[in-house]
Length: 445
Image (cartoon, rainbow, N blue to C red; front, side, top):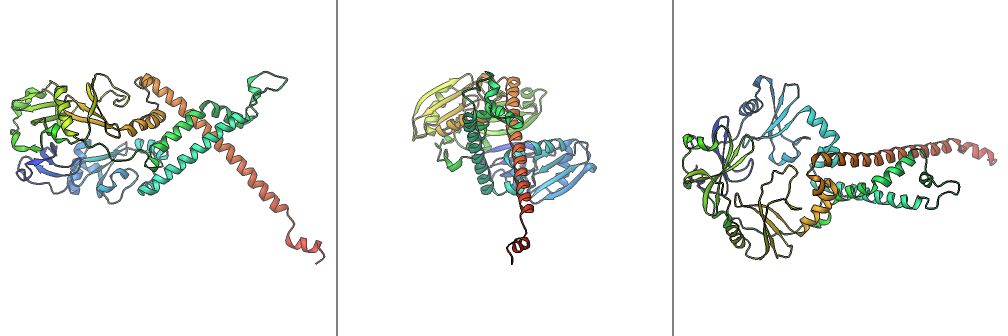
């Protein structure tokens, strides 16, 4: 089987129940899985094997596991609904853990606990309207999010306009206090104040949420095609990789444990990308077997990138030693330095290359960069002056979210009370209206 798949776009070596396996082709959960010790193909993971995998993964006895075959997506596997069925394993532990395992690859795809599920019900699920019956219908869910966000934008903007109109620009003659200029009392007064203070942030937050759904496909379109072959030098050929020798690998990894190994080619040469248990990443050359610490030269990357994009020209390139406004991460785990190349294609695409691996690390066109500010900037407020200070950013986000919640909560309560009074007036007028018999008697019929 390995001979039949000697050339593949991607090959990864990992382990399933202590047996090494090759994952040939595809991404996570896709492709063919071949046992590396005898060359046999894994033809699926049955219930017994899934329970063993779960027990090993959780370091728990199989007697505490309860098995179910999940044939339809539930609240926690909406994102995996195209991989159904899944092995669902419920654990008899204090956390009420539930995990879902792929029957094709044996990978643990989802892990939830009672705590994470409870948090989801008060956070992510209402935030995104991620209710199962709605979310499995992509088109309907998309339209609901767009229209509710649009209505939210209209109401927030209307509230801000009314706030300006209702403000008493000329104070009453008997006072100069600012508070006297607010024409409301009670809860409506607090609704007005929170709206004035937090209204702009509420509007931008709802508006950016609307844009995240790409309404009317305003940023969609065909991206600049970057051919990966000039960067890699061709597909992976397993014949170029030597047999694994634990003694040769021991000096490279020391006391660390290997989690996964990707077979790859970079500029025509075979390499291993090794992921250790602490998420550290090593690039290992095959001949001789050694860690490559030298970065690939900027000149070689630029030359191959030109071949990878023959229909556009590089107008600017720069080796960045710090994050820019589009390539960044709050935990600063994205690799640096990074090579940024700007193209003159109609969508003004920027491509980021990782010199340590010689691979594309990101690609953005003009629409993506606009959305970065209109969505991530306005929705998450990930501006560099405070975004990298996690504590300050979290405090700011908590205050602003509480302010938005106050606007919405007070407004909802006031609206419910007014609606209740309106319904009571209707009911009262209906009860006090003369009955048809009384009207007839009064008219002499």
